[in-house]
Length: 192
Ligand code: GRF
Image (cartoon, rainbow, N blue to C red):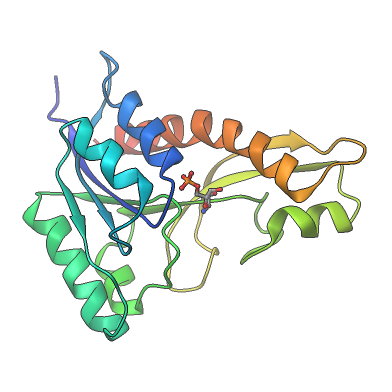
């Protein structure tokens, strides 16, 4: 079997997508392993889960640091862990162009809308306000322009009568947890 891809996952909070990616990597036919979970917030809940599962973690607050210096530290942590792929999973930081360009084609993100609709924040409320029949989720390659890289996979999530941004977000997350490991695996498999 080909060597597994080595994935570093960057998070900022809950880390439920990270957990989905991590447990998917434990399936018998997994094409990747998680070599690092890193956060820009030492309190990020997901760090404790990763640590409990024996995955190396790294945390560095961005507070008081320049964007370039913070990015450099996160990138170094990923390299030190031997990562060949960086997966953003609720990482609430805009990255420097230089960091993104160095990982072009090897950095993925998940965004809670059907891109190109609703890049940026408040995606669920915007979809509800627009009267859309569906919200959803996209996995895309990261490029310097926010939420604009090639879309690798999407899943639609129906918007119900009386839907709130919170209720939609909860359901979109179920879709995210299915989509992200599958799209990442397909993408890494396609490269090998
Ligand atoms: C997800 O909704 C993801 O689409 C967005 O941030 C959220 C992260 O949630 N980019 P979690 O930390 O993975 O639970």
